[in-house]
Length: 253
Ligand SMILES: [Zn+2]
Image 1 (cartoon, helix red, strand yellow):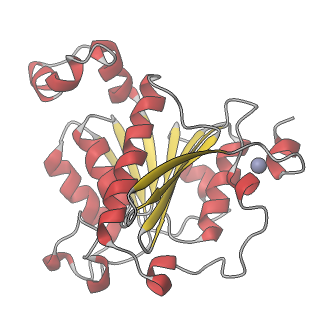
Image 2 (image 1 turned 30 degrees about the vertical axis):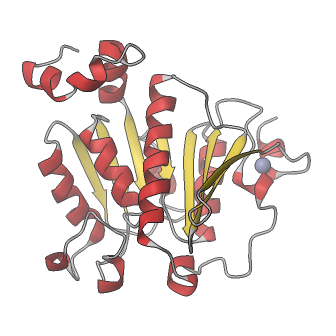
Image 3 (image 1 turned 120 degrees about the vertical axis):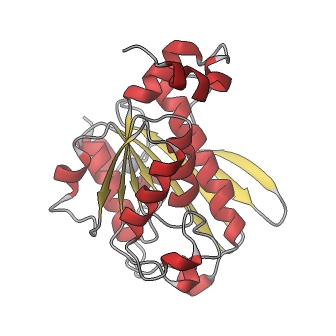
């Protein structure tokens, strides 16, 4: 593939970076990322990935835009109320970068449809708001040896995980959370509250990890959890080991 003049100009500040260059930017333009959830995390993830040139972006979200979303879901405006999240987000992203191929899925991600939806994407980003979806994405990526960048926010705190299932030693979400909580379908933000900026902090770190994994630069977060305390403003990288009797050990042998 050859860059157009406009592409060289658009991505010039990244191409100039020695660790990215023309080769890295081409990797981004050739990559495909599925973002699960167009919410507080999905908004900054989608905006950055589209702006900096991830070639194909899919967004899946079944919800419509509600007033209570607007304090953190910065891709939406007040006049978007009641519209579908996935297609509205993509209409905004097309204006940010018409260079990108977009695909919107206005549906709930389920065991039945995840393969059809995710098979055309080489990396998944989890910005969902419930454990049922988180485990579903974890298990799918594990079985299909895909990279998963997962994030979570609640109150003033957040976490980021990178699971690179192409590597046998990668832990999975179930290593960290062995038992599904009883409130598997509950949206934490709705019941516990969340400060809007946490979506920006954690979502932007997730987008940053996506870029690192696609281009292959820096140190992968795989094998660690990043724990962010927004009030104390601490960022702790904690080692996450593969659990001996975890699901990922059975599946990855
Ligand atoms: Zn595991």
